[in-house]
Every structure is written in structure tokens, then in C-alpha cells.
Length: 252
Image (tube, rainbow, N blue to C red; front, side):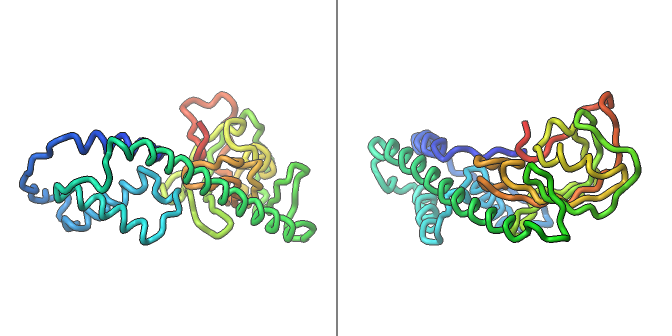
């Protein structure tokens, strides 16, 4: 899973970048394998990936703040002076990003905890859902065969993971093949939920954050986010199956 670079690293990168003299160069012609995209499309994609890499989405930036970032980039490209004295502004910029990231994280934490509480309160006692004492809710869509997985087993599953608002953060279906996991090496919701169905079965898990990625979250999953997993247990491989198991998002 790709990791985002902390915003503090941007400050150091900018300072180093500004100290270098960039030689002008003629842009290369597009090679045949990339001719399906225009130069502008590729540059726009590069900007998208830079924003992802530096986790700008995690700062809840506004449109006017995006404009400010773009003005700074344009100033550098035009060989203009930096908007501030870099010898004096780097430390304040680092402190600003640390404080802002923490403020955004706390805000998301509070909002998501409230949303989770309301979501499971509405689900409580409804006949369409079953639950475990741990707080895991589930719907068995297909029971599957008699063979059941144990926590030490490696399993092969198709799955789709979404946030409560329907945002998909991971899917084996998109990759075109099932994934393999050892059940006691992934989030607790999987360890508890997958053994509830047999081989060939399907289950839908409604996961409180304490059984998922907790208050920290992970890439693509906000802090204290409740999750929904649609899981198909394709095969139980057993505890001694060869090969390297894969990982759910955030599991190291």
C-alpha cells in the first residue's frame, strides 16, 4: 500500500529545491506508448499524484488554498522570488502543517465517532442483522459448505471494502483475482467474521472502527471510520499453505 509523505517533508524538499539552478530543457516528444494521452493530461495526472503523495487531501484544503499552492509553484517555475524569506519561514511552515494535520485528524475523529454511533444505534435490534458480542454486525448472504476456516488458516477471498458513505477503498474484484490472507494477521472483523461462513459462502460485515483500523485509520480510511466489507470465501487453504499471504489495507 502506498504511503503518503508527511507534510513536514515538503518544507525540506522545497528548501532544497529552491537552492538548485534548474537548466531549461526542451520537452521531449511523446513516445508511441504514451500517445494515447496528451502532454497536458499527463501533467495534470502528475499534479494529481503529487497531491496524493504529499497527502494534500488529508489537510481539507479549500479552493482558495489550492490556488495559493498553485501560485507558489508558478512563482518557482517563473524563477521569481519565493513568497517569503525561506531562511525564516521554513520552521513556521513546519509547525503550521503539524498543527493543521492534527486539527484535521481530531475533527475527522469526532465526526466519524458520532457517525459510527448513530449508524450502529439504528442497526441495533433490527431482524435483518446479526451481531457478535464484540460489536461486529453481519448478514450471511450464502452459508457456503460445511468446511469452516479457523483463525490460523490462510484463506482465499474476493472482497470489496467501503466506507459508510459508499466510498470504495479496496476491492479484489477490481484486481481481477481473489486475495489470500491469514485470518489472524488481518483486522479483527475479518478474524471474527470469515469463520461464520463455509467455503463458497458470502457474508457482509458491518465493522465498528475498534474492529477495523481504530482511531488512527490508514491510507484511504479516515480515523475512527466504520467500514463495510462484502466477502466471498472462495477457498480455505489451511494453516500450512505455501506462498506469501496478502494484506488488507493498513495491515503491516
